[in-house]
Image 1 (cartoon, rainbow, N blue to C red):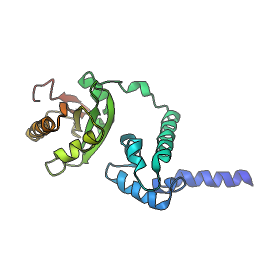
Image 2: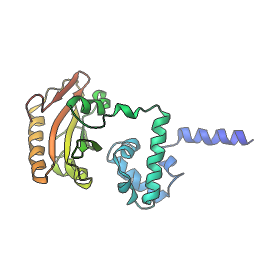
Image 3: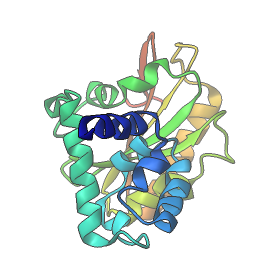
Image 4: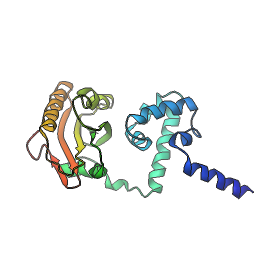
Length: 212
């Protein structure tokens, strides 16, 4: 009887939504607030990857202890799935390091714009998913690009987005956007090191191709 009950619970977990699973760990009001948060960055996994414990801690019903527990739970989940942390470069030394971090973007069917946040030694602090869809000035503004960089005291950033067509040739809009972010970074004291465009045919680097 106990085994049958356990099987029923496990079956529920496998079919449950992210919100339903979170409700086993957190109050309903907290789950709703988290759902609104990760709704802006695509999905729960992306939110867990991008959100620092101190950012989670300010959400009602979480606090510092529960924030660390959520991060620990996610790390255990990644290890169970065979995630190899050694694949993530300890510091960004080249455009290839950036491409390695964002190789999952190469086959996305929609454009996505991300920002890689680095410290003074160009070690990765975090990444920020800024926008999904057709990238224009309304979606990608200095406020969105540098918001988390300022919060985490990043010294430098790398801009990253994908071209679903696979052709990573920068458009005129890509170049204008890059120049705009470079100027905004100068005002804020945050270096824009590169703008990488990825696709299944390869990648383009603003720094290497001299359009930064």
